[in-house]
Image (cartoon, rainbow over all chains, first blue to last red; front, side, top):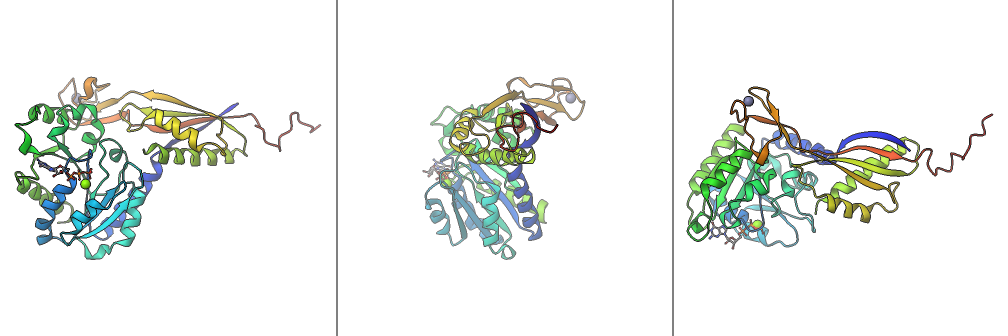
Amino acid sequence: MHQINIGEDLRGFNREIAAENREMLQRFNLFSLNLMSAPGAGKTSLLVKTLPRLMEKYRVAVIEGDVQTTRDAERVGALGVEVFQIQTGGVCHLDASMIHSALHQLDLGSLDMLLIENVGNLVCPAEFELGVDGRVMLLSITEGDDKPKKYPLMFRESRLLILNKIDLISAVDFDLEKAKKEAREINPAIEILELSCKTGEGLENWIDWIDRFYKSRRG
Amino acid sequence: MHEVALMQNLLRVVEEAAEKQGGGKVKLVHLRIGEMAGVNTESLRFAFQVLSPGTRVEGGELEFEKIPLRIKCLSCGEDHCPPELTFRCPRCGGANMEIISGREMDIEYIMMDEEGDSPRAPAFSPTE
Ligand SMILES: Nc1nc2c(ncn2[C@@H]2O[C@H](COP(=O)(O)OP(=O)(O)OP(=O)(O)O)[C@@H](O)[C@H]2O)c(=O)[nH]1
Ligand SMILES: [Mg+2]
Ligand SMILES: [Zn+2]
């Protein structure tokens, strides 16, 4: 028996394609966000609330990642925005090559902003960079305030944490301060917003956040 | 389950490496998996069982080396393994911490059969 040293990252292939995506998005001056969360935290609801506002200012397209169905794409498409559907066929996350082929099929020159809804999953999407400007994660307060320490990776990799379903705060034992503190222990730079897709509370802050980040990247 | 995609990458990389050696059987694949890597080693083993038949790694073994999370303070240089995943410097209180290890998902090395079952390599050398 003899040993052969390899030293290769299993994610290396994805990383290379993510770099190509980044380069391509920059070439078209296209701003992009990757929305990640556990299933049902409210990614589609947030898009449905946000898109009408964004469409007043930006030319937006959405990529919808779903394991099986086209339901989210239909909900978002009903707003009149261009939606590109990716069905991962059982895969628990979007990867860079899926985004890459979507980029080749979208008219990138006619867009300002690309919003990507990842597959609902609290672990896997965090391991697969897509090459976008920023990652945003949602944690709905019904999931529990212990999630940052239990699933640290996504909190570490995200630029913004949205604590969603804040309208339910009196119905669940969710310690907001504890969740924020522990999220910041994992990622001291993370920004945090409280929001309700149901009541619209916090929506302004989220739109402002997008505007600011957009300007810092493309302004 | 993204372990299938990761395993496909693994098999591709390992096959290429074995090919470069002139062929033969791969007996062992040694992986370094960080404490904070988003991968499940049991699922990797499962994907290996499903996907390795018919490759040079068929019948071989996967070996995992667990790498602890280690972070370094960019202000004062202190490095440590954070208890409870707290990314804050215990020495200066700095919050700008760099991950030194713990995110690995690397194929470190493979073990191959000596000349292997390669038909081109006879049991003893008839050169003289
Ligand atoms: N009360 C309340 N319910 C919400 C809120 N946001 C979303 N929901 C509900 O939560 C459920 C899931 O929301 P979705 O927007 O489909 O969540 P998602 O993250 O897109 O789900 P997947 O795509 O399946 O991962 C729906 O029934 C929404 O109506 C909120 O702020 N408050
Ligand atoms: Mg959805
Ligand atoms: Zn320090």
